[in-house]
Image (cartoon, rainbow, N blue to C red):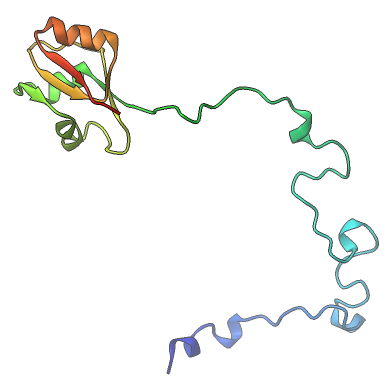
Length: 148
């Protein structure tokens, strides 16, 4: 016995439709295509969005907006999260942030200024907001942005 001999079972398969083989078959004469019309013709495949020659909706509506292909999407991390997760550390690297599970490795990290940091700490991340960098400096720490 081989795998291809097991399935599908004979009763699970349906015989293919044999079109145009007489009226007694149920699919004779027009072969299930009805009378006349665009879809009854040979080679009838109507493209998606085709509206019978009328100007299609996607061409009638105006184009709006702009999507920047070079946008850098950052994972935001707040100062309050840093003070919660790393209260005892003097230096926080990007690897520490990834290891703690605060942020994903798929995106660069940006430190934002929500919350307070009450101890001096050296933080390395991809980017810093101005308020975050100021709060870190005021606490006696340093904010180092990574290149690239």
